[in-house]
Image (cartoon, rainbow, N blue to C red; front, side):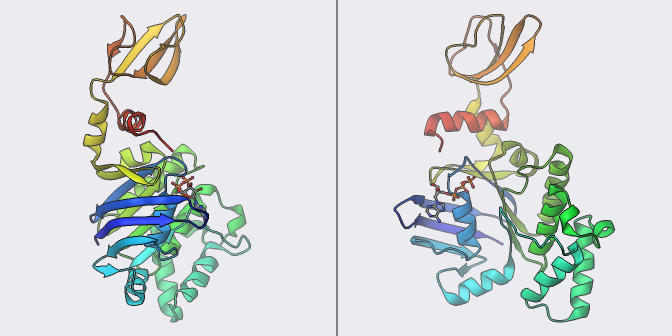
Length: 290
Ligand SMILES: Nc1ncnc2c1ncn2[C@@H]1O[C@H](COP(=O)(O)OP(=O)(O)OP(=O)(O)O)[C@@H](O)[C@H]1O
């Protein structure tokens, strides 16, 4: 399911221009949307989910234009959305909550609901805990309940907004693996400010900065933004005065710095292999974050 976005602009009442002329083509599979706080990611997700109207520009999802009522309806039928702040009822069990959402989504047949919810609890690895109240769930389990509710209508497009924020490393990895598995036969648009989530799951990504696209392409192309610009320097003295220090690890009597800079930050600096995070930071140095 392809997403085609052209000249998309969103200006909020009060004048904040959250999206400023976005052109983006998202193919089937897993796709990352990276950007710092306030870059416009949630605004874009909410427009895709039909919850917010753009100020101008066009958005087509699977060929349906979301500017028309029929288009929005068609997209809502093929889209599952996991918002940043999914509210749940803590006194419901996971099974009860999913049943409630399924009813809201118009799945009237009790048998269909029971079967579908059973399948999704299994996909989200929640079967054993399905009859426990949500108030006792961990952050990772709640996020998986969120994915299960987003999958109820078997959407071809899954839009997930900052799903791994606040998760511990094991839960984070488990959640990422789940998303990758789901992307096998659908489009999964993953919005995040965590570079590692994209590095571990996506081949293609876009970077938003202050409402504009700063980058689109494959992961390797973003990594190479930091080619010949990453250095390590171990010194007992102060941090290098030039370049952006991205890591500082105590080592012996000194500190090993990792630095992004166009030239070696000191005579003892050694070149290092760039990571996706280095590429992202090098790009942000260039465009200015925000
Ligand atoms: N309802 C609103 N009214 C006015 N301005 C808004 C509204 N929602 C968001 N904004 C502003 O629009 C810009 C983009 O916000 P958005 O939430 O889309 O960014 P984001 O990339 O999702 O950030 P975060 O990672 O912090 O969630 C910000 O400057 C934000 O303050």
